[in-house]
Length: 309
Image (tube, rainbow, N blue to C red; front, side, top):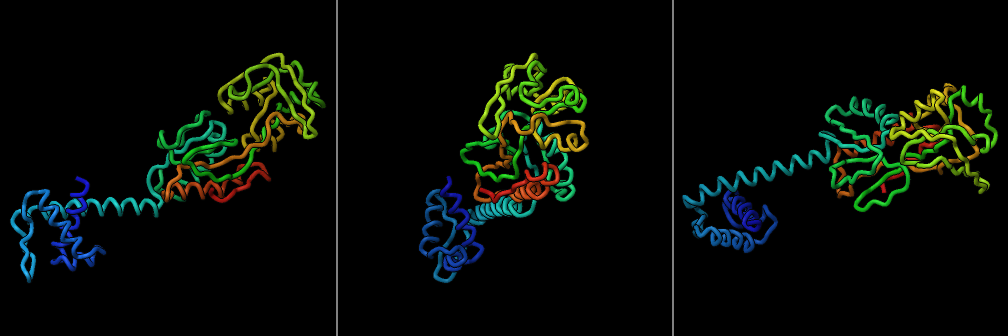
């Protein structure tokens, strides 16, 4: 059947051009190849489509009816190709984006309205979840990944980095007067579920020194926004990604504790997308927009865009 589809397109071109020679030139094929295609199509159909004379080709009644169907087939295929090519050139259509809850709430929710003002023909559906999705199996066009990753059949471009400082509300920080890791012992630890499951935390100093801190209580949540709210309201101390607390640190509502000690090493922020020969224009437009504008929402010095890998 697949071979017949190709032969039907050749047959339609022969009818339109009026000869095997003219059709061969239009298709970039040899005249004998074109003739063989039509002959094999007639053999497959068990029906003569053309009457061949030394001067011209004449459609049989069956050939005339069949040509109309072949022409419709070629027109539909051409239209499909043009639609696809247009989608690769003009930003339009739906883009499905995956992101962690924290990055989505803090950054994407502020970037996307501006993107849609610039590209009104592009619709965005962004799904916030702290688990990694399979972009190909789950039909996502783009994902924001924080941390190192090893993804088969994926491309990536780095847009920045994130640090995760220990934070406390202004009032709690003043009450604690924390000067060393040991001063945190016995406090309540606020964290998201994917980071820690016990009350013991390891802090690292750039010198290589490590300190283990035991907390009296652990309060866990699966949402970064909830963790930030708990810390802001003085429920305890905990790590928060710096991109989520730019405004709170600037206003003094949140305070970094022990800035020389780290709970988690600096991690890259990357845009990840399926490895295709050509990235659709709608996805490329969003990638370029995020790379160009994310600096407005990341802490100073954390915006380090790199070329697409």
